[in-house]
Length: 123
Image 1 (cartoon, rainbow, N blue to C red):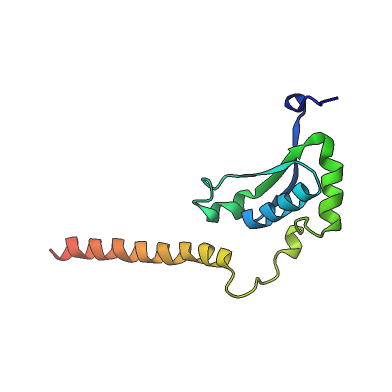
Image 2: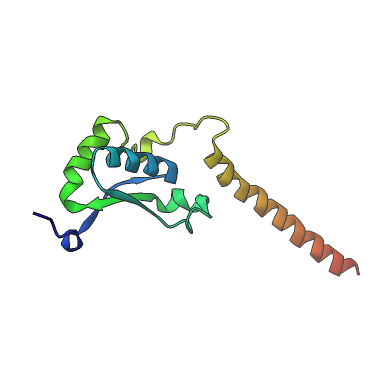
């Protein structure tokens, strides 16, 4: 007997800080025959800096939520609570570079504005 999947509701299994972590969890669930997909508000991966503030959701059918949680917990793939994420990340992590580039870009933009103002004031 075939289940009507279009009538089932979806639920969020877990929320990760990066797409990479969510994709690893999705692949693990797929190997365990649990359907899931990744949902992120990062313009299709073009703006990875938006993954951390908004989170990357691992979504699946509500009926398989308990199985998914148990499988992710057994594989140690559940996201850590916020207080445990405050530990310093490993050096050279690409996610750290994307977050720090915002500061450099802001500094360069401010310098450009200052130079333009000086140009018009001295001209």
